Amino acid sequence: MTSAKRTARVIDIARSLGFDLCGVAPAEKFPELAHLEEWLARGYAGEMRYLHDARRHSPSHAVLGARSVIVCALNYNTSFPYSTGVPEEIASQDGPRGWIARYAWNDDYHDVLGEKLDALTGALHIEFPEPFEARPYVDTGPVVERVAAKYAGLGWLAKNTSLIHEESGSWFFLGVIVTTLELAASLGLADMPAADLCGNCRLCIEACPTSAIVEPYVLDARRCISYLTIELRGAIPVELREPMGRHVFGCDICQDVCPWNHRAPATVLANFKPRRIGPHSLFSPALEWLISLTEEEFRQVFRGSPVKRTKWRGLIRNACIALGNSGLRAGEPRYEEICARLAQLAARGDAMVAEHAQWALHRLETSAKIPQDLAPRVVPPSEQR
Image 1: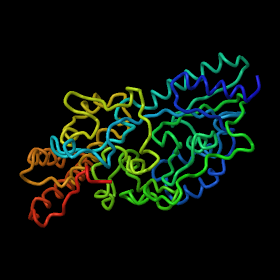
Image 2: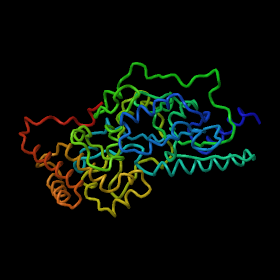
Image 3: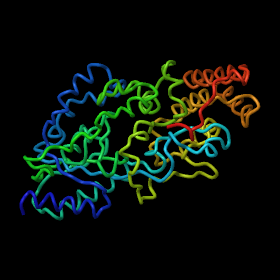
Image 4: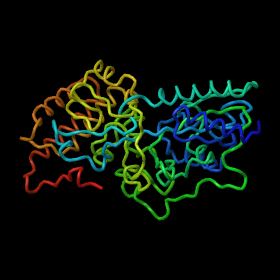
């Protein structure tokens, strides 16, 4: 069997296992990775020390003798509204509501995607009986998946640094299998990676509340809401708290506004539809519910969820900021109850949680003292674009 026929079989098997996209790239140092050191030197990685792993400069460093990188994509989009357009009647129920990034509404993608990659790896060993090594990774190894995906023919790297597929948009997870198996790259020598179709569009850059996209194709992770709400373990910088809005875990804004996502297909998998816990949903959850969770309740609610990565104190910190930004005023539903809970958190021995609860209380109390006719109008999500 030729290497080209092998690649065709790999793609066929991947699709039979439920992957939406699959392609093969050579295990080599891709041109984009030449800029990695400069990006790290600017400090843009923040506290993510794992990004300094020298093996990330080439997939060939992940597996000795690696020849190919199989890249698979799994759609996680749903038919639920975007964060920039949640209906007002949903946003106003039970007091202020927060936002959890679309990918984290239910099962942990590491587990869902990992099981499928393991199944694909096993199928390859049956399909190709000669000895070879194959190591799957889902954000767990020294591989820059989105760059490998570009050279596997799955799309282009957009100005917000996400990978975009012309038909599927950017709502998909990426996983790779680095292997010593000799496969033909999806892109032939005469082919080029997908053309950059961002054109003159700057919607993602202009929509980012924290100005994290410092220039097209360059992201300062330290300013990114996803980094602030998930990776950063300490206090959120004061100047970035207000721009964070109601985000409590991750952020979808740069993808929400992307024209290539307006017709993106929805997944058929139930794994990524919003999880329900009694009367609560992880789609635009009530902030009062989040700040009232005990550590044990947090573990139960987010068992098998990506949200567990931020830990209890991280989620409480983020929810406090979202409440401080909510514009909730005295006399409105749940105001007294929310302020009472924030006061309890402000009195805790955990200095970080206390600081953010105090910040939220100060914001709410200050808002309550402003005459209604002088208070800035809070634009409802249904009017946001």
